[in-house]
Image (cartoon, rainbow, N blue to C red; front, side, top):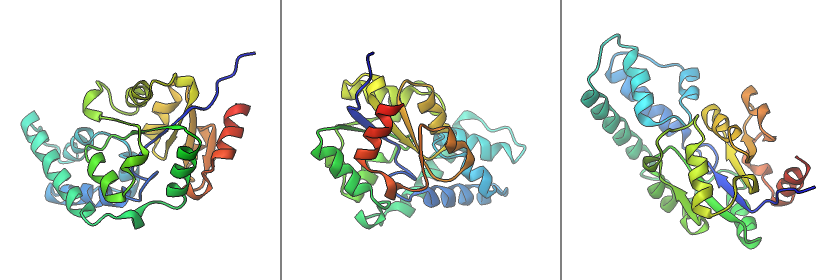
Length: 222
């Protein structure tokens, strides 16, 4: 019986590689305050992995106003400026536990590595974290028609690596991102303790538990 072999690992960025989710949350709150509305922690959690324009639309909708498309774009630019201010001081110390070791494990094993993030700031973040050299491919969110929870960005990442989807594992922490991975033949890895992450093929409480040997074992046993 034919079985897929693990050949590539595709990473989400925020909340998987670095703890930048709070920067996003603060940028969302700042925009909401400017529009004289509030957003809850649960709403911020639901925005994980969602494209900036959709987050802005959701926040703007709470005002009860009808915004023109140009206004939504302008609000998105403003929200991104807030986020960029908050990540300006990122450094390798902001990598989540075990990520540098895991990336090195993958590299030593000649695994292909890609990034599939909804963030348009991915190049800056990877450079600031000092890990750009580990990635063979980065899927540009501007190059996909549909963002998470559609699977397009993960499929693009695998295509850029030239690795069949069934030979890939993808790591996510957000509900939209995990939904995207589950819509592909990829092996899904969920990081965190939120109930929805139990749907992943492998659910870890945090990134410190990411180890290639166990990933291979679970991938083979799927």
